[in-house]
Length: 156
Figure 1 (cartoon, rainbow, N blue to C red):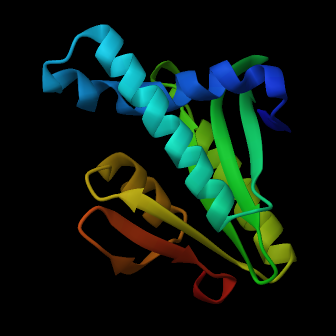
Figure 2 (tube, rainbow, N blue to C red):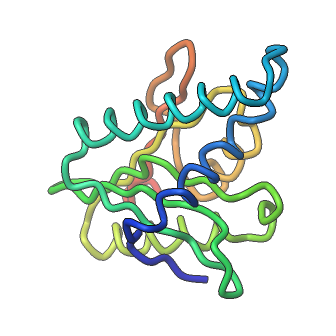
């Protein structure tokens, strides 16, 4: 497994990964396929703009598993912390330890740099929440949509 910085020509793949994370939710709304696609493209563009405003030095990476593109990792490496802005693995590649491996490497780097690691998870994403807790993340805040979590070498 490895991550590589995204190249401009890989933007379609990044949208595909985003779409895979939202499709089951949006498909229940009774829209036609072209409406769903247009809506998700708009949401994706807005998400990317928001990320760049909040994290100007955002690193966008493609996750590879067995030489296949299987996901994306958006990571902000700040002065005192690393923020996992987004990690998404395509559904067919989930539950294979890919996310655990990637996040474990981020935690190892953070420990070496004496930094904390932060992330947010959608409150209904119980599978991801369980993984983050197993990796040592603690809940630090919550709103109506997201749980904010933090990992610190002091707590692990």
